[in-house]
Length: 417
Image (cartoon, rainbow, N blue to C red; front, side):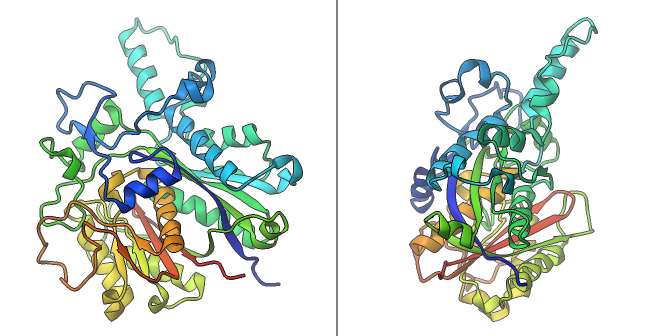
């Protein structure tokens, strides 16, 4: 018996450039930057004073004040984007076998704000351990899928993938594999992250990972630009409903795309730096292509990891050149992190949504904030700089790479019945 086919039937997004899928997509194709001076805490003594924060999100209005206080922001974001995806997919769980519907979620860090608040409060006290009883269940990285399953009564496989910035690509791949093996009918999958706080910004500043372009935050995320100086921190969530094809057809679901492959690899090189030759990145793209039964020549668009770091971007370009050869001149490449910032564990999910919508619309979202060519990059490569481009798109690939050398790549194609 062969693999079952897996399709996308629902999308949900909460991002720094839009609090719904439609708003997110409109901002992407119009090249809107989500970066601005941080409002959630005092940045006076911080090297980086800006980020891509979620805007106009009312947790109390969405969840009620009592319930919102029990949840870390990364869980609030997960529930919000999931509600949109469930509605978008037209799901009525009372008519479905919820024992065969699971939740696999990605988060690189989990409840960092909760951990920070509780430890600071303890440090300021007299040494008496007066921790909030919700401290641990608010903080742990696996709690987001737990809350999603509780809200909707879903009793299928339920866990979190943690692989830094590859986390939600890994959640997509795991969900995909469970469905195509016949072990579940549907998954709510994706990722969320909420690290724009003193610990998150201070920690990444200590690593010299963040841009310090405080005089011009909106243009600070500059993937593949000569003057890139680090990534811009982002926050939010993305939810994708993956479903077995016949199950989707039986309930009359609309189908956005078909997921056809996923690859995973490790750099086995350094704690935070990518392999200088892009070895792990090339390996993971080839693994995804093999899993999908495709050649590099079948890909039309690659949504790259593209974080705007001095060492990360060149390694990914080397990897793409290795994988695609002369086909690199035929495809479009773009980094939507130029607009959303880097959502860490949620990046894979929100970028997969962008890739799926590119398939549906025939529009490649741009890599904005390009001012100066980097002479180390082949000028014939189409990075989709500054302006969205229209083209025929049949197959898309989306990459995610994380600290620790974790790499995960996913492939979607236009659905054909």
